[in-house]
Every structure is written in structure tokens, then in C-alpha cells.
Image 1 (cartoon, rainbow, N blue to C red):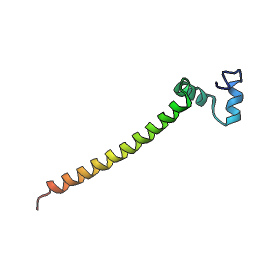
Image 2 (cartoon, rainbow, N blue to C red):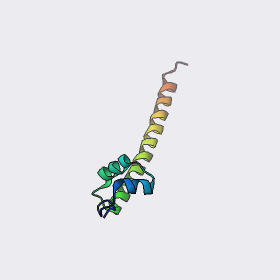
Image 3 (cartoon, rainbow, N blue to C red):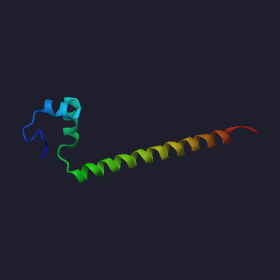
Image 4 (cartoon, rainbow, N blue to C red):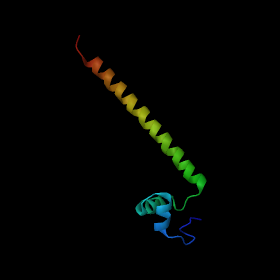
Length: 74
């Protein structure tokens, strides 16, 4: 249960943890119905997705470089 659900004021919680009230509401919207294990899994998936995007970008760069070399006339 969130402290806010227990009756604590959002402004007090925001001040205590050093975040904006809008940030609290954004996080609540994004993670409100999740358990801790679900949030951890979401974080892992985001990390894996980021790694895969970097690998794809590297592969596309290599592909473009090879196409450039092949297309040149000797």
C-alpha cells in the first residue's frame, strides 16, 4: 500500500522524497497497479530493449558502410 493510499498528503510526500507532485502522479499512473516483481520485470525489459536498439543501430551502420564500399567504382 502506498503512503498516499494510507492518507498521507501528496504534497508532504513529494517534499519528503524530493519529487514534484506531477512526478508522483505520473509514476502512480505508470506503476500504480503493479507489484514490486512486475515493476522489476518492466525495468529489466526496458534495459534489454535499450541494448537491442543499440545492437540494431550498430548493425545498420555496418550495413550502410558495406553498401557504400560496394557501390564505389574502382
